[in-house]
Image 1 (tube, rainbow, N blue to C red):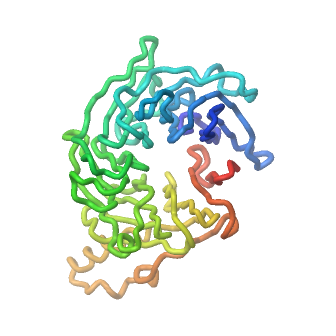
Image 2 (spheres, helix red, strand yellow):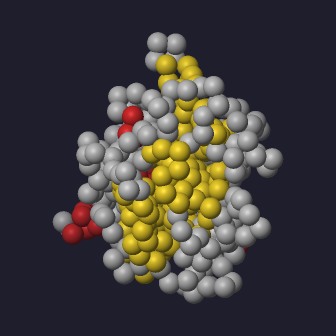
Image 3 (cartoon, rainbow, N blue to C red):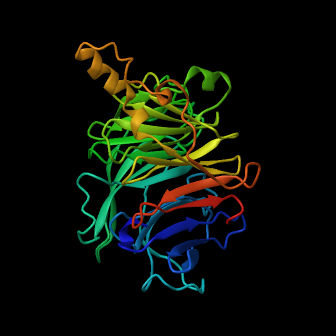
Length: 359
């Protein structure tokens, strides 16, 4: 929860088929070095995606299963009642404004972060991106007393043959005009399982990170995308082939680094906001920590050396030529699938992982 200031708090949404779902806020108690319940609030439909506001710990956006015979998923921004520290589970989140006109499944909602977002400004709204089965939409939220949600922009349709809603997305924190989505084949774009970066001024694709041929031949896709919060033009992906990758968006034909070590799908990738560290979540039952700065800069450094008359070989390290191995592994291989990871915004040395059994 970025808007919580100096306290480390994580938000988790449940996905129970029979309802009675909730949003849980979990805090890190540094004195006991333990996670403790901070607040539990009712949210009856299954939650398919959740993201807290970057400027307020009182606002959270969710996407959820249809509550009617319609096939269109619902979505809304909610306000956490009171001081956000009620663990009884008897209170419900308070609706601020719904997302209008979702088409089919919608499983990716992201608040705009980075350039142009002042964490210290009054939290009266924000810009959100929602990707559903047909389009990418931008919404402008007014969370003041006259709460309203307006559609600010809409992309062209992904096409009738698109295999489903995008499974992940991310704002580029270095610009106000780039949003990346991960999904299957977009028939309108003629791309196989890649990451499409949209220019939100035109709502058209400006950059495509292609699914590597080896991954595509194995029937694997990307599962997540994350921009490097410290360096522009850098992005990371997680894939069903058990690999995470680093990319230079100026030349995205091949990854600049491959992070190899997981034994099953890599479901999430998350970059540290302060240090050159990356954490991944995998279906192999582990979360893994990686260093990424040196290898991400390999191509750029090589080009600089060539410009200066060097052949670019004398300064290379072993990591430039080989796959990058993990610094640390958390959990036991073969255990319960790890489905989520997130860094603390208050303590850059702390991150949380979420297992499929709710732990």
